[in-house]
Length: 398
Image (cartoon, rainbow, N blue to C red; front, side):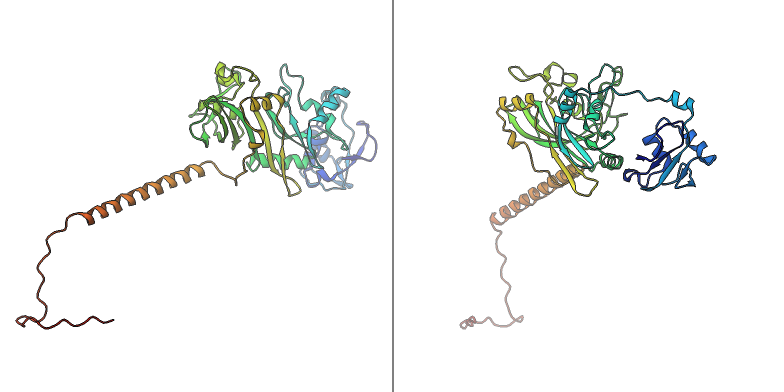
């Protein structure tokens, strides 16, 4: 969005449609750039002919194109006073430097940061330090803030994607909602799963009485939740290093699922209780890290980013004798929940069939090796009443 004339809301203003807004509805443009103006006000301006695009009367549902000029009438004082936006606090130099230090990828459409544990993605009750509050430091050459398109729990570290334009935000949001984005997490869990890899398919719902801050497995009323896991390495029977891939995006999904199968994430007292903490020098912080994100970029090429481990996670790996370089398993082709189980069932059926065939063959061999029955008397050859041949037999050919 670029202004051509007065910025005073009490006068007529003109804006040029930017490339990022090409093709969107006019009412959507107002929602993006002038949220203080209600839809009712936009509709009234359109009805009275005050709202124009390139000099022509426009309706809220009209599509606008890059380079067109919007004529916006003066803003009503009542609207301006009632919808005044709360100013954001000015960031200190230390906050700006900290935010910039988190960036691990940057291009015209996307930013990726490595979120540290303990930093919330968005603010809330008693939460004053968060990624959303640092976005003014990540505008770089643009005039607008990057946009959050997904979230990580406060105590989960790793890859967090930010969209730098509205078009990119819509593109990435669609990728997450359609499950085409691949998110890979690393975790240290208690004990060792008896099956080295598999799917966890357990519906989740908010736990009553927790104020919505805790989830639990609810097979009757819960929302579908599916997670794929693979064991990377094991430390005896004490703990395991696992790779987790969520196929749905429920709150606390990975934490609830691992606790539900008896292997809570180390440091996750909320879902694992006191058993989720290892003795000795192992950190009591949660050991869940968003290691990798692969998602289609708006320009058509894949965006594939990895985030380094936080210090406490790396120290735990070393303490348990794990090599960090062994953790990045090959990213297999997209596997949908249910396909692995189907293939496993087919494999079991094929194995059972092969076993039945082997049994049948052993039965045939036993029958061939059993004592033979007395041979029946040979029937005389030739015509009835003919004398038997007594001469030498005819030599065989060849």
